[in-house]
Image 1: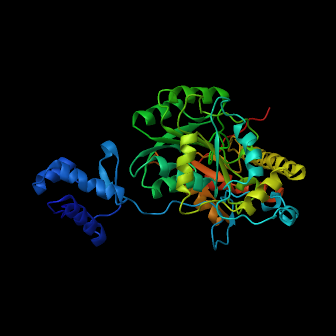
Image 2: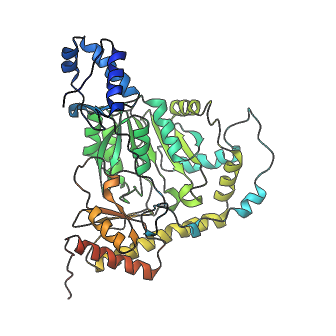
Image 3: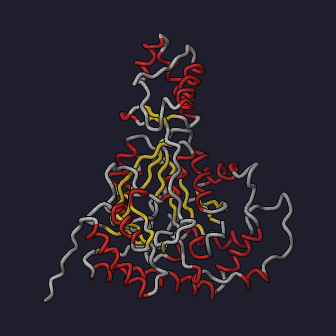
Length: 447
C-alpha cells in the first residue's frame, strides 16, 4: 500500500497522517513508515519525523511497539465488566458480587450523617483515616513511610497514579491475562502495555524482569484473587518479585488488592522497604457493593502528594458522607461477620462447581475470587458460542489476554449465585459445548 504522507514540518506531517486516518486510507493497526524511510521520502531531517510521530503518539493517534514498528492506534473499546445489557441469556460472565451478600446499608445510613463538611476541611474523614491506617499497614514493610489518599474507587486511583507518574507511550507492565479495567485504563491513558505472564502463584519473575528490561515505568499487579485467573501471590513468589524489583526502586509499583476482606488467601506484598515509588489500593466495592465508589490508597509520601494534586481541581475529595458510611460499616461487628461469611460462600460455591466440572471431564482449579478460570481442550470462543445455544452467556478468555495472538483456551465463569440445579446444568452444558466444538473430555478411571 502506498501512503500519501506529505509535509515539511512536524506539524504538517502529523496533520497529513491524521488526514489519512480520517479518509480511511489508514486503518487501526496499519503500519507507518520507519522514521528514516519517511524522512528520506519527504526530504526532511530525521528529527522532524521523530517530532511528528511524537505529536501523534501524545495525542493517542498512533502507538509505537519497539521492533513491531509504529502503527495506527486501535480505538475499539475494551470489553467491560458487568451484566450484558439486553441479553435474554443467563449471564455467567458478569464478575459481579452476589447482591444478596452485600450488607444492608440502612441502619448505618440512619446514624452516620452528622454535621455538614465545609470547604477547607481535611479531605479524609479523621475516623476513617485512623481505621484505614491499621488496615493498610497490615502486610506492608514496617519501615515503609505510609500516606493515605481516598479516591472514587480503585480504577480512579490507578488512573490517577499512572497520570501523576507517566506520559503518553510510557510502558506499563500488566498481568497477562489481565483485569479488563486495567487494560482499559492503560489504553485510554495512551500508555503502552507490556504483558507479564501469570501462573498459579501470580506474576512471574522472569516475565517481570523482561518487562523491566523493556523500560516499563510502572507495574500493576494483583497480590491475590487475580482477575481472571484467581491466582494469589505465594510468600516465595512475592520475595522473588521483590528481588527482581530491587534494582528498580523508582519504578512505580501498584498493588490492586481488590478482594481484600473477602479473600481466602494471605496478603503478600512485593513492596520492599527500600522501594521508593509504590501504592497499595484497596476498594470496598466487592464487599460493600459496586455503588460504594470508594478506595483507600496507601503510598510513599511523594506519590501521595502527587496523587493528591491529581484530585485538584477536579474531584477534590470523596464525599464525607460516603467515607463515614464506609467507616460505620467496617467497624460494625455484624457487617464484618457478614463479609466473612460472603467470602466463605464464594469459595465454597466455586469449589463445588469445580467438582462438578471435574466429574464431567473438565478438571480445573478453584483459585480465589468471584470467578473461575476454566481450561478447555478447544478455543473458548467456540465453546462460548455453543453455550449461547444452550441459554448461557459466558466470557471467553480472549477478552483478557494481552500477549498471545492465538485464541485463548480458557473460559471465565461467574457461578457463585447459581443454585445447585442450575450449577449442575451449566457444568453439563459446558461439557456438551466442548464436545460440540470438537474437544475431548478427560475420562476418569473407576477403581
